[in-house]
Length: 186
Image 1: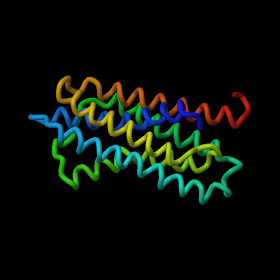
Image 2: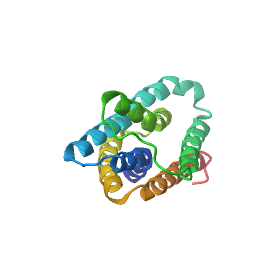
Image 3: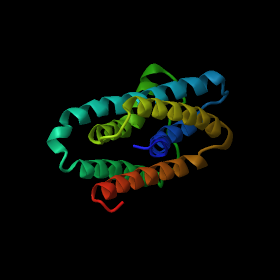
């Protein structure tokens, strides 16, 4: 996987976390730097951890499904991206402003499930540097989540749906690209 593809994928995956971070910022009265760092660490950490876990599952079972792995990658990315696009038309934020352990753990896991599925896809692809992938995904998600908290606090929720729509489109397009490459069209 080329660096620019990985970068685009990282941004696409981070859009869920960005959207939730915007809502966190919206629900925070007196924003402090620690809010940005805490949200960034939770979301960036889980967005980095989940593809690593998925990669090992994909690698372990890749031999059994290599004849149709491109279809698996396409379907996973299309479903994840499609859900993000659908959610982008959902409406207002309904996120608790709390930064407590239970709240943040639940949100970090919820926003990184798609990264787990992408990690499975990484395990099926021959040219993925998993260390570079997880680091880039984690760093991009950390940065965009921290920015999202600030954006939500300053501008409100109008950016949430655009972020989810953008992220969903990116994931669907990457799934189509993987499928077309394996079918020999690209």
